[in-house]
Length: 128
Image (cartoon, rainbow, N blue to C red):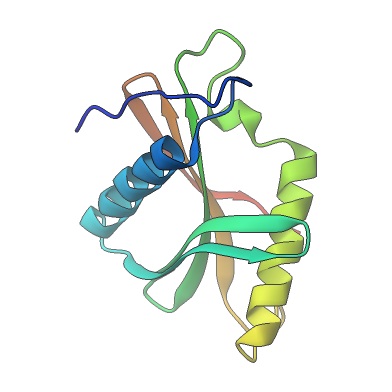
């Protein structure tokens, strides 16, 4: 796996360039597992979906997280209930713009978490 610097913007949050690099790493990882890329950085009121992929007929909304260490719970633990709610709402709006809904589209929410040099793929990590 390529080394990606953990650059921050001074607030402890990753800067855009570094965040984009982790998202690219996640995209390559998922494509190597057979998923097909649909879109990246889809934004709407109050939220953003890092990656949208297809796994067969299933639309997969992917949250990508990075943490330098597991000291405070690791990357996967940083996907809080509040974050999940924002992702669900953003996905709902994205589906509506593409003539779909949770009732008519088979979809799931995955998390690709990078903690240090470890990668963890949590399929169907949460739902409505």
